Image (cartoon, rainbow, N blue to C red; front, side, top):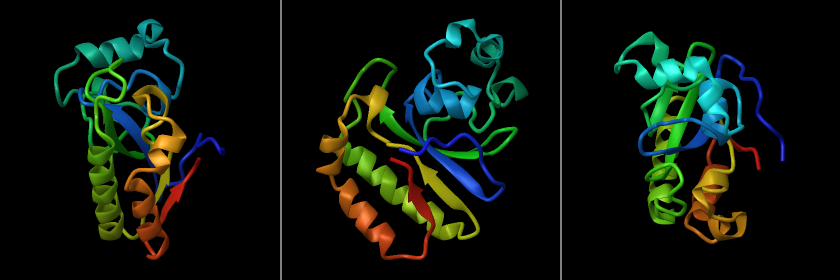
Length: 159
């Protein structure tokens, strides 16, 4: 698996999020804080983001925005796209694979509408969300990837 650590100006980091848009750890933490570890409690900038009102610049992270759980986000150093894979942090398997698949279809529609961007996908649905790669491969997500491979829309899985 290739780790995404930098973005070119035309690239979008696609990651899994919880419904609150907390972005504390995993690929969401990387999008927000540049760190995948579950150490957000020690991150002063992240604690400021948690306390800041909606729309405040302190909520803007590297590639993501604290409090936004789905769709396109513009951080101070790049763009991301969140797919909600959890209802709440720690509640594994709380967003159904069907709902994740619907969001992947919406991602495809966004990518098709923004042909100048390349979307780089993390293993959405795996990790903190609690699904295994094998389980995710048995979802309609596989069909989504088949659709994606038949189009000129640039979505590149990184898993």
